Image 1 (spheres, rainbow over the protein chains, first blue to last red):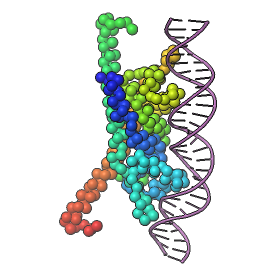
Image 2 (spheres, protein in one colour; image 1 turned 90 degrees about the vertical axis):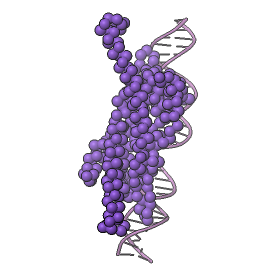
Image 3 (spheres, chains in turn red, yellow, orange, purple; image 1 turned 45 degrees about the vertical axis):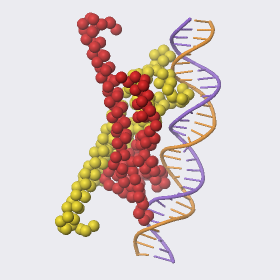
Image 4 (spheres, chains in turn green, brown, yellow, orange; image 1 turned 60 degrees about the vertical axis):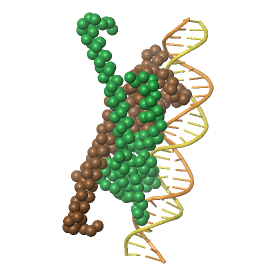
Length: 132
Length: 132
DNA sequence: GCATTAATTAGGAAGTTGGCTAAGTTTAGT
DNA sequence: ACTAAACTTAGCCAACTTCCTAATTAATGC
């Protein structure tokens, strides 16, 4: 299990060509943007209301909104002169899926390492294995 | 629930000052780095073995390893002239925790929205509520 | 000890990010 | 019609990213 072929498959299918994950994780890598997401959980809001808590010029803030939109995390619509921003509820799913998959692989590996250590310890207790 | 105070608390505790999450998500935002993580699930490996599948000069690749290390995702040790890289199994936990927390908040909000819509529909069916 | 291997250091080009100010544009209010 | 509000565009800057090549250092193998 987890031989070179399996790894290649995983690499090419899961991680290599995933512009989605790129822009998604990228969008999440900034505290201002994470704060905006949390704020939006309380409900959709116009740009200037979202921007208000941040000590930042509006164009700079708009840049963050753009990255959130690029990452698929929010959607915006303009009505009159007001642009309203809303969460895209399922947007975090790919990130979560990737992380969960990694954890499974990692833990699988570590379980086997645990088994190995246990076996070593037993052998040592019995004096049947190598001393080191 | 989820009034301004609650939101502030969430902002300041969960998202605002989290250099960990910054560098963690940052590290995850690149396909080469995600591929390295997946490869490392099959076992620790020296730098040049890790670098081999990638069409990239070694110093460039080392830059990716550095970002992974900065994000706390891998640890490296040098024995002789060989630097061995290994996963840090719990490194993804903060990312997953943050995502799960967001999902709970988001879904909480959406459940309440669902309730609201259901109520509206009932009222409309009964003719007891506003027409729009 | 000398060549080879494995990694590192130094320095640089090209593009992106994250901030700014100043000057539009479009809509809403009176 | 005129003002104010809510973005939007344009342009600039410093810092960081992501790649490179070339030169250097530090083991190892013969």
